[in-house]
Structure formats: structure tokens, C-alpha cells
Length: 246
Image (cartoon, one colour):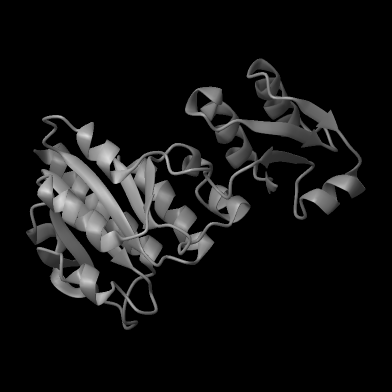
């Protein structure tokens, strides 16, 4: 079993509720501070079982807790929320759609921070390779401030195939690259998929070959590139800015 210990992560997961098909609980409590009581009240309303246990026992189950921990069966967000096929089929005639493809993002802190930006800037789907990306439940949930419970996600065994399916559905694919065209000079309205690779090796060659172009972030720094989660936030902001500006 896995345990969420961050207040935001626990709260958002409980709010997500049974309607998502991702049940959770029990909620273990060793201390009853104001924030913990607030979450316990939410759990009670949402019919999540609450169990009072000793601090020693809670520390054994969920090290690093703050007096409260939520048991979840999944490793971060449960089964993929959807599949590429289901996502594309549900788009209908939608013109503006934003997808983020993550290629080998293995650091759970980066993964969680990226999901937080995805929530803020209205990403419609995050696509990642199953079994390969960062999946540490508590770190991802804490870093994303609980938004990992809400951001639509899909896993696939083959990112190149997924990219091809998106292209067939009318998406333009842009790979993030420090030498790419400045983000503000590329049209990011319409059906767009942005691809981010790992800081170590970047986007894999075959996946990069599916791209219609590369997009970069102009900078004045002396370090080679931005952290991948920071780069994600900047690119997603630019995409959202263009969409709002019309």
C-alpha cells in the first residue's frame, strides 16, 4: 500500500472521490491539529473511513507524516485516467487542445511540479510511458500540491506511436529544445502537443523525429538550460497566453 502525507495531497485525493473510480482510505490520524481536523471533517462527509492510531504506528506506516496519512492503492494517481484512443475519440470538433508528452521524466519532484503547472495552465492531457516515469506517490502528490489527483493522464508503452496517433488527429508536435525556435514566435494555438525529455538525455531520437519543430525558451543565463519542470511551466504559460490573447 501507499500513503499520502501532505495536507494538500490528502485533501485533493479525498475530494476526487469515488466517482473517479479511485477509492481511498482509511485516513489514519495520530494527532488532531486544526488542519488535520479539517481534513477529517472532509473525509467524514465523503464517507472515507477514519482510524485513530498511535504516533509510533503512523510513523511506521508513513514516515515523514504530519500526524495524518491517507492510504491509497495506487502509486501516485492510480490507473491511467484514459487512453490515447479514448482521449482522441472524445475531442469531437474541439479546436484548441493542449497535450504534454513526458519522455523519461524520472525525478518525482519534477514530475509533481510539472503536473502542478499543467493544472494551472489548462493542459488537457499528460502522456507518459508506463513503468518508466516517476511514480513515487507521496512525493508526486506533495510536489504537485494535490493536483496529481485532477490532471488527466494517460500511460502508454510506446510514446512514438502515441505521438503518431495525435498527429493523425490533427495535432502539431513541438519538442522542447534549448536551441529550438523561441516559444513566442511559434503558434501554439489549435491542437498542440509539447514534448519534454529528461534533463540527462533529452527527447529520444525516434520521438524527436515525429516533431513538426522544436521550441526553445530564450534566456540570458550562464547555465546550459532550465530545469525541466521550470521549462514546462514557461512553455505552458506561453501556450495559454496565446490562447487567451486569441
